[in-house]
Structure formats: C-alpha cells, structure tokens
Image 1 (cartoon, rainbow over the protein chains, first blue to last red):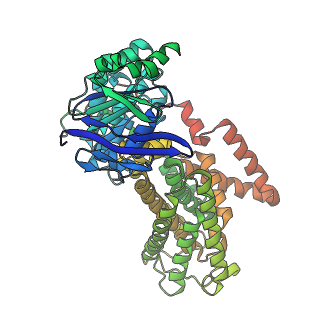
Image 2 (cartoon, rainbow over the protein chains, first blue to last red):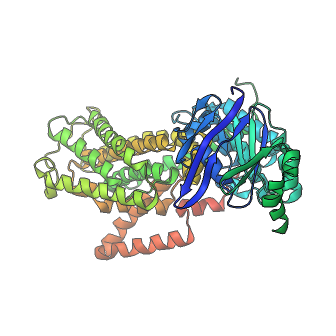
Length: 251
Length: 329
C-alpha cells in the first residue's frame, strides 16, 4: 500500500443522467508507466479532471501516496506533486518558453509572490527552467514567444511546464495529440526517459505507441474500468478486443 | 559573483529589465515644463497625477487582465481621505498622502476578496457597481464630504515645511512628479519581478495557473491591493494640490476616462498609462478651448481609430517600428 503513488477509491461522477465515472478505482504503483485507453467518451479525460481536482466527484476518494487529497484545490494538489498536462495546448501565448517554465519553477519555489526583487535575482530558478528546456530539446527556441513555436514544440512545452513543478505523479492527456507519427514516437521516447521517481499515466489513442511505451494498461469504457493489465494481457483480452480494439479498426 | 560571466538565460532576463535610453530621455523630458511652459505647470501636475492613476490601472488591467470600470473608487477614497485630514487640521502633505494611500489600500484589500473570484463581464459589472455605490454614499454623506458642493476648507501646509503650494503650480508639479517617479520605479520593479511574471501568466492563460501550482487568487488580491493603494496616492495628490475634493473624483466618468487613456496609450506597457494621460489631457485642454461641447466627439473618434488600427495602443504601434527582440549574442 505504501508503494502506491496514486490511488482512487470508487469515484463516481454524473452530469445529469450521463454517467461519466462509475465506481472508478485505480492503483498506480510508484514509478510505473501506465496507459489509459478507451473509445471516445469513455471518461478518460474526466478521470484526469477528477483526480486533479478540476472536477469534483459525486462520491469517492483520491490518494496521493499515503495522503488523501480529495478535498484539496487543484493548485494544492500540484504543490504536492500531482500534476497534469492538457490535450489541447493550454500555454501562455505571449510568454517565451523560458519565461513560462521559469514562472512554474518560481511558483514551486515559493518566490512567485515576490514583487520587490527583480527576476534575475533568482538565477537558480532561471537556470533550473533552462535545464528543463534543454532536457526536452527546446533550448534553441526557448527565447521565442510560445505562440511562435512549432506545434510539436508546444506539446513538449506542455510537458516542460509540468516537469517544472517536480511532479511525483504525472498525468498526460494525449501528449502527442495532433503531432505527426514520427514526432509522436520522439515525444514518447522523451516521456519514457523521464526519471523513475515520476509515476506516469498517459492517455493515448495510437495502439502501437501504447503497447510500446506502457508497462501496464487501463481500459475504460462508458465511465467504468473494463480491465487493467500488462500489454500482453490486454492484447489477448476477449472483452477488450470486442469493445475497443475491434471497434477501433472499424473506425 | 561579479566576475563570473552570466549565462545566456540569465542575460536574457537581464536584458529584458534593462533601462532603455528612451526611458531616461522620457523622464528627463518631464522636467522640461519648468522651463518651456511655466504657465502650464498646473496642467502638468494634473497630467502627472492622472498618469499615476492610469499606471495603477495598468497594473491590474494591462498585466493581470482584470478589467475595472470602477477604479475611481480608490482614487476618490484617497482624495477624500487626504482632503479630510487636512480639513481637520493636519495639513502636512507627505504624512497625509501616506494615510490616504493606506486608506485606499485597505479598501482595495477588502474588495479584492470579491474581485479575485470573478472575471470578464461579471468583473466589469461588479467594479462598476462598487464605484457607483461609493460615489452615491459620498453624495449622501454631505455632512462629511460636502456633497455636490465638494469638500471645502482644505488647507495644506508647506511641502517639506519649505515650499508653499503656489498658484502657478511649481510646488504642485514638483510634488506630483516626484511621487509619480517613485511610484513608477516601484511599478517597474513589480513588473520585472517573479510576481510580475505570474501576473502576465494570469493574463495570458488564467486556467493554466492552478495546473502549475499557482494560487491566482492570492496573486490577484495582492496586485489589486497595490493598484488601489497607488490610485489612492494619485487621488490624495489631487486633493492636496488643488485643496478641494469633488464628487467627480469618485465618479464613473473618471473610471471611464482613465480606462480610455490606458487603452489609447497602450495597456500592459508600463508607459502606456502615462503617455495616454499626456495625450488625453493636452488634447482636452486644446480641443475644449476651441469647442468645449464636442470634445468627446474627438476622443470617441481617436479611441475607435486606435483600437481598430493599433490594438496595442499608441505605444504598441510605436514598438512595432522598433522590435525590441532579444538577439542571442
């Protein structure tokens, strides 16, 4: 139990008569790489919203490590290491990449409320932000406004912002959405290279990517967890083939 | 530490906060009215005061994206505070101004709890409503404020115990300009601080801020309190230099005017409010001499033209001519 990085217990959420989460219980062991898959409308993004506090569950609890975080605000969960990225770029268009990541580092270090000192006073925060951008191969364009970056670079910046918060658990909502196949593999190899201290769960539609980069897979259908297992188990699971993998081929 | 060459990211941020020659030239030019237009020093002090007021609005609107149509509430509150202190027998300008600043700051802090919870149209309506509410309260409390007749009997002592507030505005402009410079230095520091970066983050994408662990609400409360304090200082200056306070200091017209000035000059540009105040007040002085009734016709025209063709204001338009892009050494 103590080796779990993230756990939910019986999360329920409905919008009117539409059930988007139905008794969702997941357990992510420390350092694991999880993929969350399922057809459109299965409730994958909703689950991330529930776990990160952007939606309030009707019932159920969320644990980060040994601590319950169900009643914490999203920013407080981030400060404790429960961090997400967004499917659609949710970046700061007129901040340069370096400014954006420096901002995230400052928020984590607790200096973002300081208005009486110039930013260059915090050289360590700036260097840390730059190092994150270097590690994601964004160094060459880190002085340009975010809005001018190539789309693939913006997807990497999403991850850079998340890393700047020093996450323990990182929830990636379709990190490669809209990125061409070749770049998407590169992007996922960046994710695969992340420190083992970070537990990762990602939503992804490309089955090849999922089977290549996930150690374990959770399949969601209609707001429920259908099955959870290793890629091999998932690939041979009859229910998964019927409800998801089979359907995806027709789509 | 001094001998160690700064890294490239460090130099990038150093470069962003560096004083530009044009800035120094601008502040030097603010001294010119003493010699070039000594008969216009009263107008110059009005411009400095209004520029300070616009600067305070820029902190919340231009940097944090908080649109306010009731910013005069803090200006007027500072104005009445400074005026009443002098009327009640304490005419020392500097301490009076500090008290006015504190009073407006407290009012700003209290209201910031409501402000920080709303955005967009709701925020415009709340600030508008709050401004109207305070103006009407001041109107009905005529035993205190003098109501529509304005606050009479404000007598200021000499500035620093030496300089009397004269009819020509020498002391008034010197005083207003000195306070403006100090407030500007403070605002400039704030904009170049980590907090300033966080404010720009809120303006650019407020919904992302919680996802990087930021408490936008705390940031907004802080900047709103600082902006209210600064507006109160501007209001206090007006009361002290004119030795009267009218209901107009709290009025909707003043809130709208300062918004127009900031948009004209360029919001989010630090100098936008001051440039806007200079253009607006000089134009009003000139146009209203020609045809006082139709003055707002020209302002309306100018506003439409600027918003259509220079969406980032006059300063934003000028900045496009000389892109200050940092080039890697």
